[in-house]
Image 1 (cartoon, rainbow, N blue to C red):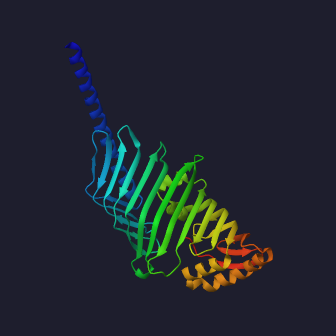
Image 2: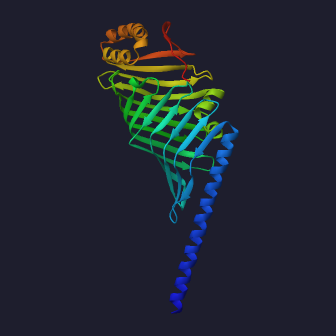
Image 3: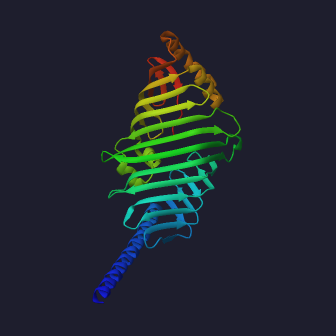
Length: 324
């Protein structure tokens, strides 16, 4: 009898202790969220979480919002979306999974806006002492419709974004799009993959909470480990090499550019960017000479870019527009 009473007392104490711990962590989470909103507001960023609640007792810490909104007065970026549901294990609150519902509205710094829908959008984040250590977002069946140019609607079957802190103050980013296509067949469908190293930016991004803000304040420096555009009807363009982006958004770097099946690649690019058709044709003439000389279907050539101006040796290829 005494052993039974002792065991029951231990169980009650454990439950009471766990409950106290859960409510303590939940309260701390609510406090952190409130402080984060205040700090963002002080820096010109508005973060809203309508009807915010924290629940999930006893094993999870869940943050829920009926809808979310983020607006940056400095860059002009605005994002609005539907319900947000996040969950972290109570014993491991630094790892969380977030699900976001569509529809959503996105306004870019340029002022162009999009209406967006998706079948699934899930993110995961792991926090360290200094900030996020890893971050991933995976979206399925995403539809982007420019509000001023609905005929340019794009559908992306699979979109992935991954970021991780490396070497204390560097960031590795990877973005991929599978089966991106024009809903009205204005341009060829394609796959896209890129991996980029951003040097000496982690602390700045954590403090400013925006890669774009860091870029506009001090520029970016690092390496394009891979930038690959592959039209599904044929051809391939791949770029790699060290790169810098100025505060004005102008690219500088020395790149190895690999081209496969130049005629089909040129056709795809001309269909996708008809206003740049003449520029693509001018650039392809010099490249075609190299391709014909080697007799290969795939060739890698060095291209230099200085403040957006491209060249092969002393041969100019044109100018790239600012990246932001």
